[in-house]
Image 1 (spheres, helix red, strand yellow):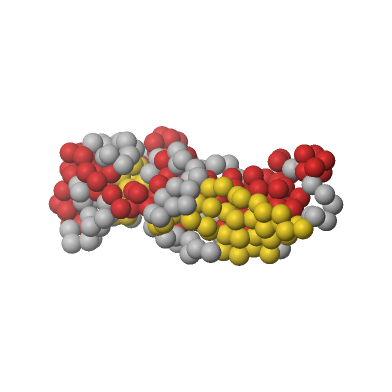
Image 2 (image 1 turned 30 degrees about the vertical axis):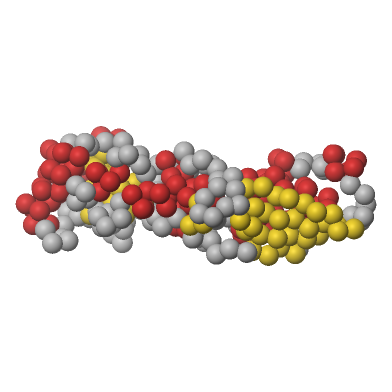
Length: 288
């Protein structure tokens, strides 16, 4: 996680606070004091596992110190069911940690798995799959780490670490040229990205010297036109600004978008629409 991000321990503590609260009343009523148990965490759907650090931290905060990972994160596992982690400790602690640990593991593995599917869909085109800021509040660092585990790339982490000039910025700055000038003056160390909605805006943005163009909601024909405009402006053979396609991207359309010649494709769905990967935790009592 980056230096600006929230520590994993705090993210987990907040999740446990909303789930466990003042205590697990069911386990307090039924689990004998001093009972110990072992638990197996099992992957039930094919996909990419990610989130075991959050599982271990959840277990630790609940009082379970003995947790062993059985898989390498970031690799596709197609043979399921498959054990991904083992834990041992106080039975009540394992039960208290179960749902929060599985929530982290299922959600983050879902993000990594969906990312891997998009990356596979564009294989051989040279296009990179990027995430966006459309993340779950409070979980951005973890979700973006899951995108990396799935083979994708991170776009900017937030508003603080990259410049993206959009329609509203242009209007408030008094025009695109002024907006780019102000961005360079304020942060000369940062690359400037400009959002474009049509080929006229692409042609104008190419003249500003922006390092990156965000091609927003363009069909494939228009995207190919943007690539040709870059070539015509002297940006052939890898030169000129990087072109990023965004909007209208799903697993059905991403290959055609990649084949237009854009350099990257940003996909909000990686983090805002990923389905959880299915895991379960099976507990066996050791002593009571």
